[in-house]
Length: 107
Image 1 (cartoon, rainbow, N blue to C red):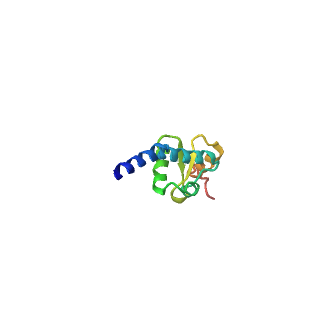
Image 2 (image 1 turned 120 degrees about the vertical axis):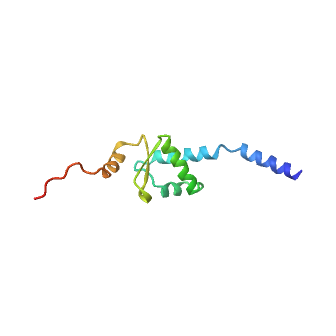
């Protein structure tokens, strides 16, 4: 009897909330889209303390894979940008990674 009550309570609690993964993905995407200069993982986690670090990493990877988000930089400096972000914010970051094609002669 007690097990049935717990089962019913669990079902009721899961029926009342939306899919938490979808909600978290949407929340992260909305935050990234709202940022003009992109966001680091640390900034995203600070804005969404209810999402575990590894979960956020997985969700961001899915957003990158789906083409909704792009990542620039490495390690702690990695920033996540919305694909539809203004070109000025991402162009400067992208140009910083380009090796010059020509070096002027010395002397």
